[in-house]
Length: 436
Image 1 (cartoon, rainbow, N blue to C red):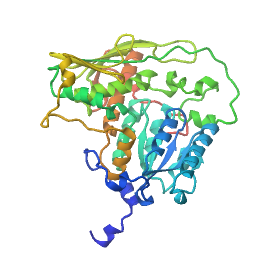
Image 2: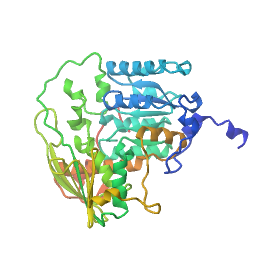
Image 3: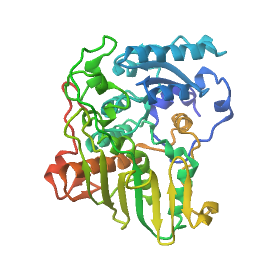
Image 4: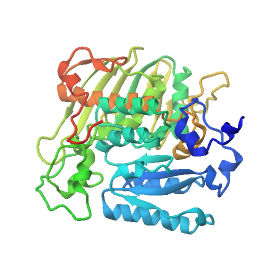
């Protein structure tokens, strides 16, 4: 290395180097150290610290080579609680002398403007994910983005393109890709242990009916206009902004739990089918959408997707398909969800994947994998193009329900070839002044 190379700083390397390889990053001894020096830490900001965001905050604080320096949330109590959590955590650490305190922001743009932040996680309501992710890429930040990554197909493409253009490391919140059972199930399928794969049955929760509602005063602790952001203007009611409630409102979600929960298992179906960079070519289905109350996303649904390789995926609520993914082949089946792994014949569960067979990306911890890849510039367990293709299937499913049509999809161009109305639903208007 010449003198100029030796003077290259860690942060300059993180901001200027594109993703290099799909191989998992191997930890060095210094990365495993209990208290690595500041030069070896990844500085992070948290955008959205309620619900899953709160869990991520504690999870990333538990990694010794992460320094959380900023939090952002439009809810004052959540924002202040997160700030206190970070400050209290580092007050107990021996390396506290290098920590100058955690800053708190209402506007994510103020956090992204900081030059001292390497990476962020995004755990806001779903309708904000695309805007923040694209702006994070432009600002030179690596990112861990919660699922679903968008509320329409065009937003997902915008994220994928921005991440690639600016050379950012991206991890999707589909943490099942860092689970042994899911990986092993997919390896069994990919290596032909169930014979030729014919059908994939995906089951996930459905949305529910919501209450009738009336406008209420906006709490002073909430930046409500910022909470709405790119979504249509709407009168405030507490349930609209409540965690576990906005999931079921179409303005803030990808078809309710079709995208909000279904993405987890659809993503595993893609993994097992070997179609991470493509998708189905036909899709049709039905669902029931409530016509009164606050919630307006499908309370039941059943979709059929056909792939170019002849595999059919049946994606439905878990009253029709068991929760998880069931891969069915000529010689047996494998079913996997977060609680268990089952197969027929049972001997499949004791199968060893041989060295010369297909071995899928191995990651024992999703957050750890992200930080390792920020350092190495390797591809994560759930990279952006894979994330976009899986999420797209949830978007197509919702569109099929809304149109009631049997749709033909071209994965290469990401357009329907037989429906102008369906193509119009690939994008979603944003409230001024927000745009991507």
